[in-house]
Image (cartoon, rainbow, N blue to C red; front, side):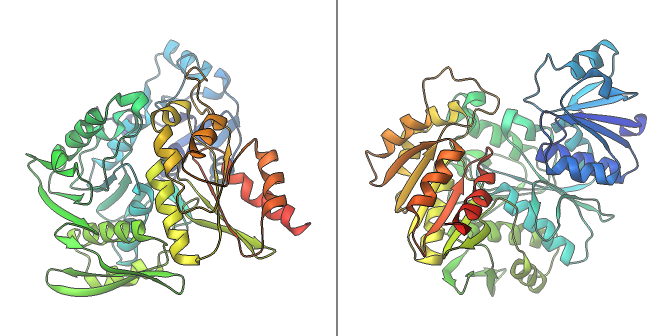
Length: 455
């Protein structure tokens, strides 16, 4: 399904403050559409959209629709939302975000980045490389790129770079020319049910790619995903792949690695921390090369790329305590972050984790418990429910008890207030604190820094 955007003038977004929704709203605003929207809580995205001229509200009410002739919703939107109910009564088209993204992306040459981990960083980096190479791409991603200063860029070039979200199989609407698949570990099992169903969805995504699928060979199940597809398959990785990052090193706040593109060895250097980000940078470099960017330009752009908000983001330092924040909400992401911290800083590591959704916490309870091996101290908060209600009998306290089976120095701290207070009592000079989670844990770091100033 695609939309005839030319038939619409006023687009209303239900959940406009979401990072993916706000990117699309910014795109339409720049293209001359009247844009409005609402969200349950005010956030920075609403501030930014309001500054661009969009009409936005905190809270949902049917009056917000105005004369909208198209309504965009997220997969998680409630059917009884008053704006959706009235739009349907008025026979205004109500369309999922994924359909609008596909309508934009499928109109031209698209690079789509999918995968359980690293989508946002990799897509932001591809967009940055193409921008620096003068290709003037359109970019629509699920995070604020620091170089971009936004989650959206509206270019005049032929390429569009998008983050392809597997939640609710949203990415199956896309028809990219080039796709990147960073890995197919199970996630969103509340939607998919099984790991096999996750891999089947990624296989269907790969089948819809017209020219080149760039697949991470480090994932042991990637062969299932790309088997039998019509597109050319290029593989990359740290341990396997046609294009392999070798000699990955951390030095002076940078990560370097070596790779030979088409027989020409290059040394790449990135500000991003960790072996997992060397892999992400290699994926981005491979995609950019397929889009025609020269190796020297790729190398320079990777070096100047400064990352994405809430991806290993340094929040500040007080009393010789460094505070970092990250979106990690899967066991593999937690383990990768902690390994990167250990390699880059070599100091005592304090992990603070807010589990995201009861279903994910239940599905990966033991994996979460085992993921903190590189941390010296672990503080576990209450589960951030997001779209769910507590019907599964899992909790932050339960995760803490399970984690204690594998790790010393584990404490259940519950709320943000209690976590900040406990950390302020326990932290030592030279500690590195990382807050992790996909909920609202990002606000903890600034509060902790403020408390440390007064300690």
